[in-house]
Every structure is written in structure tokens, then in C-alpha cells.
Image 1 (cartoon, rainbow, N blue to C red):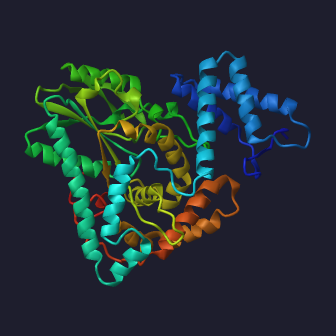
Image 2: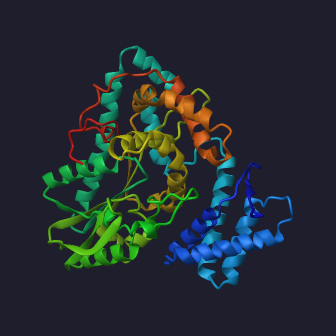
Length: 446
């Protein structure tokens, strides 16, 4: 029997020890500085375990902080200074994030300009959809269709304004980047912008960033050992940069092709060159991540950021969290298009969110325009779809220390969905709505 069998979490819970989590943490730090040697990461993890077994008193379990200290020690002693620095910096970021979350009663929104959130809140108040109670009253007055209409108009206006901004700078722009966290509505918004700008004579050439995924075995993993597709380090950022710079310079490049059935990438497959009147269109989670477009002058880029910036309070006087709206959207889309159950989406949302907080949200201030994709009415449709599931998940994960994140999210979402008057049909939702990207029934070709 190994001496090291359990770990003490920050909450005080004692959970089974898993060496793969140490291996994955080391490999993730290595990937962030350009390394991809998983065997070396596994060897280093074994050195961490040996150190802990040699120094942990009999009958005691090491605390997670002590394990992380041991990782830093082993990395430095084995001449992996860059990896150690990346690991230390990420650890410090997580400490600061936990402090921020613990000290705030509202969801963090300081990255979004106050003028933007105030504009959306002012609109919500004017339409009586700033609280669940107020929207329920409108639904009971048979005004759901009107809520849908004005919500869709507000979104379309924001897309119009983004298109106007691009046209104002059409003589300079060679690249339009549409970025934002998971399930914010990037695909639909990209299509709508393309339609508008084509009418103005601009021709867009899409660059599929997914083609630049590394082979699956080279991906970093999350703490449960699942491959993490959410991090920018899952992409060959160096090759993306090179191709973007050459395309902007008018050169031809050979794009890679990624086979999602085999999880393998083939290089030098698809020739591509930009004509004088053509503009690159990039729809990517990490479009604002600096290393993706490094070396390309900002004046050649139009950068858009999407987020469902819902301004609606529940009965506890707290705003519904934007991440919870996106979680529900992703559950519905994953179940329809990826054979991924809503439960699996919930269990993996912790690393989706972690990557967003580190690699996406910090850079939204660099965007030229922020588009709000929230539809206040959408939560009324979600209640009959998922309320019972969230109740079950909150029960299932209540006493599972390894699924604390899933439990807290399930309990929180169940609480606000329970307050909403349900709407059983989506007949009032337009067939080209951004919401159709998630609930199905769109007339757009994705």
C-alpha cells in the first residue's frame, strides 16, 4: 500500500490522492512555456510523491498547499525554472481569484466597462425585465412574445453598431476577430456580421482556428484527467501567428487540417491567400489572447467581444451570473451536437470557467466593441428543459468533495430557475435568433 493515499483540500475535505493531477498540473505549466514532454512531467510527478512520502508523518495526509509547494521545489531542483515560474504564477492567480470571489457578493464584472453594463441595465428596467419577478408579471399578462421581440431588436442593434464600426475603418482593417467565452453566441453573430458586411461590399475569408489544434495526446489535461480543449495552449499559437502574418502580407500559406475523428492534425493541406479586397474573419474563444495575433498592428484588426450580459436580479437580490446562462446554453448545444450529456457539461464546466478567467476575460478590455448576446426571456424557456435535472445534480453532488464546483453551480442555477414562470414553447423565438444556436431550430447554416 502506498503511503500517500489521501489529500486534504482547502475546504478541509479529505479526498483520494491521484498522482495524475500532479502530472497534469506540471504538464500544463510546461505547455504554457512551449514544452510538451508528458513523460518528463510524469517522472517529475513521481519525484513529488517520493518527497511527500519521505516527509509526511505516518498517519497524516498532506494539504493541497503542501503538495503545490512540493511541486515548485521539485521543478526548481530539476532545472525546470521556466516551468516552475509558470506554475507559481498560475497558482498565485488562482489564490487572487479565490480571494476575489470570497469577498464579493455579486459576480465579478469589473472587466466590462460600467457604461456598457449600465446601458443594458437601463434598458432592462425600461422593459420590466430587470428582475425575475418583473418578467414573471409580464409573462402572466401574456407579454412573452413582446419580450422576445424587444430583446431580439436590442441584440440586432448591437450587431448593426459593430458592423458600422467595421465599415468606418474598412480602408485599414484586414482582420475581424470575434471572441468571447464559451456559448456566448459567436457563431451566430459571425454569420450576421458577415451578411451585413457583404451587403456593403466587404468580402470575408474565414480562418478555421480549430484546424490548428495539436494532436490530442499533446493537449494539456484538467484535474480529472480529461483533455482540455478550452485552453489556448491546445492550439499551435506559433503556427497561427506565422500564417496570419504571412496572409496579411499577401503571401500564400498552406493551412493544416484537423481530423476530429482521429484527433490528429495534418500540416500543409489547404492553400490560402488573401486578395486585396478580402478580409480575414476569425471566430475564436481566444481571438483576443495576445499570443495569437502578436506582431500584427492593432490598426489592421477589428476586435469584437461577446458575452450574455444579462442584468436581472433573482429574489435574493443578486444578479443572475452570466456564466450560468452560458453553462445552460452549452448543455443544450453539447447534448444536441456533441453527444455530450448535460451532466458531463456541468462536471467539466470548472475547467471551462478556469480557462476563461485566465485566458479570455482579462483581455476583453482590448476589444473595440462589446456585444451583449443575452436574451432575458431565455431563462423562461430553460426552466421546463432543465429544472428537474439541476435539482437532481444538486442532490447527487451535495456530499462529494471532488464535485464541489458542480454542486455549487447546480444549486445556484436551480434556485433562480425555480423562481421563473416557465414557457413551454419556443414558437415566438425567431428562426435566426442567436438563441437558436443552442435550443435548435435555426434557419442559419452553421
